[in-house]
Length: 365
Image (cartoon, rainbow, N blue to C red):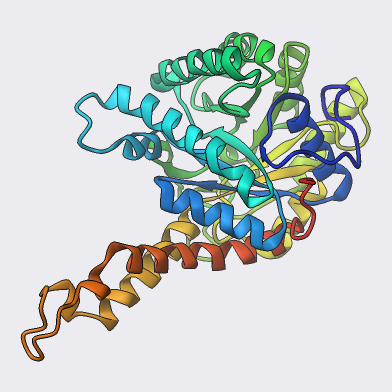
């Protein structure tokens, strides 16, 4: 069973950001229903609003997350203190989601992505804000955070994660950890993908998952990003080989020693962009509740914006058309081309909700 006796199958939730027991209920619904939620990296209100729109359109719950670079961008690249901007941007984005998500009538998990050792201070600062938010509202600011110490020895990874989880658990927050290596790069954090598709470091060993679960699960709720050949970005066919059976082996190892049914852990699929649909389906069947999709949504935003500019070239060079004398304001209005980008994200997420089986299954009442 997913950690936490509060999780109840079939329970309906209030729309908006879910944390604590409601977050566990949502994860339990994913596990029992055999579906997963897309986790979309956002960088501003346009991408946040597009994700919410897509989720509402598909009647699906969704995960909104920020990388450290996305959070910094949200605060503004002109912010003179980059470290402060990472924190302020994450807080500002979270507050925006808390403010508007309920109006879209779906449940939202708020999460932060890939924090290596250099970013542990970022995570702890966000937990500080989460504690303050808890005092004011009775809920933490975020549903969960991620720590990625996969580049360090396993024991060090687990030890550091345990320290942070001890702070998060009293707030009802979940911690996502990475075991093994997800290839590629996410805002400066990641690992090169070598020529061979069978790089051993891209495949997590079940015994490592077992060790992490044994130490961390008694402390608080933890989700596992176990690597099975997945990478950030989109790569040429054949360069990366997904092996979801590794997830099955990890679930079996934990179940055998600790019980909890055939899928005791909530697993995470990093690098979902460009993955084969049959591999996505297989991974979800082994207990993946969350699939990250960033590269594809970035392109989905950029492509229609580029098409709009190509279709209206004069408007992006002249305020008044030199050939006709007509004002171009209605064409270069940022709301026009930003909206085109938002629609692109919505279209790509239509596909993601269908691939993950979450369309029409929102728990929001």
